Length: 195
Image (tube, rainbow, N blue to C red):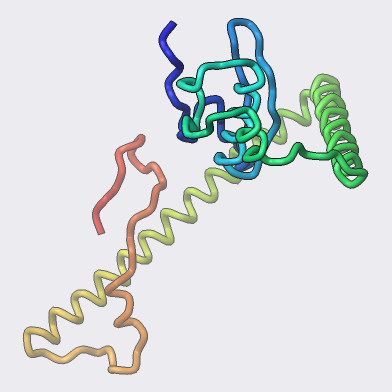
């Protein structure tokens, strides 16, 4: 069997978790031996190598082939993590929060089943809100375009040698740099990239 390719972490047997930690495990056929979660990919790779030495794996399947003995691998491996009372308390608190969230979802599903008219009203309300927000954003974008066009026209007038009705202290000159782009889909998904 060809050797496994290296994971995105750059080490064999080490994967990055969504929370930023690194998870190490050894796989052999159907066997999966979890080695725990570590702060860095390097620590997880050292733990992988120590376990690989204990299992008698060839050095070619290790992350650090310069380690020549099991004792060296154990010396370089991070110490095993101890579960303290604080760790257990944090785990218990997280489990409680998960149970509360699950119960909340169950109760909400029951409420939706019993009160479909309230669900329909809620959906109509949020649809109205989305339409109002879209309308408001379109109006704001149109206002920005008008202000920008006026400021650009005044700048062109001044550049052509004329005089502007804007005074030098008026902040409306800054309207020239207004962005008129908005990601509101006016025309069914075609983006409006014009300024």
